[in-house]
Image (tube, rainbow, N blue to C red; front, side):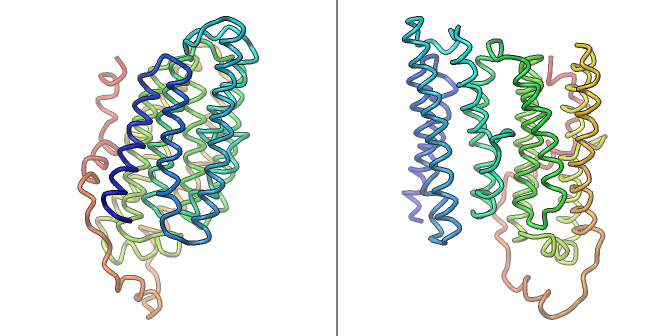
Length: 345
């Protein structure tokens, strides 16, 4: 793609997210969401591959439908109560409609079906943008109206997302699909915390973006798309394989890595609110996600592949080394646990 066009699309995507994050009016929030969606559609379909075309079509239909529901909830609320303010939702129907629309945009269960297929049909960097940056604007709207969302709906969607995210990733051999189900599971933890402690949701979102970015940048660096490609990371670069292992374990929430912090704090908040059965089920579903992270780390960092010619051919093409943000993301992904109390105060 032409660098100027690429710059315009990325700038429009960033501007749409900032517009949604800073808006207090339903129309401006909707405009930001639409600008964000329309900017990323050409980025998804730029490879001119049938899978990319299919992914861009699915993404456009899903995002356009959810944006229409966002605008519908704002129109109904303005018609009934005469207010376009985001924080002035006073009708149960508009609350449920808006929550459903934002959950669809995020990829929360039970409206998660589009996320794994779209991430599988796009390049790794585009999948990284969809899995991280595209979550910011809908999550900002949810954090804005956290005190208006029915708690039962958020807790149910969160628990269902962690279950589906854990079970769906168990039988995946494609790394991008595995990261999609990982995204669904992490979003489940965020949506559970959003009506109990919104600051924990924001902390979890920032850490999730850093963890996912570090893991997927290593996948892009080593051109790994499947578990079979993951076996070749260690012979090519043992240090990269070690960092990939630690990034995935941090995504799974193993202490003393950074990914343990949000799970620990959310479980502590749930037990403080006497939601012990929910906390127990969330902890058990975290083990499902940890299972496929452990399988991937074992294959990528502890398995030595046979030294046959077809496997060596994968590394004849040099990977792209232009990942200047990777060291900072790895630092955040691995060493944030000791300063967690400072981050949430």
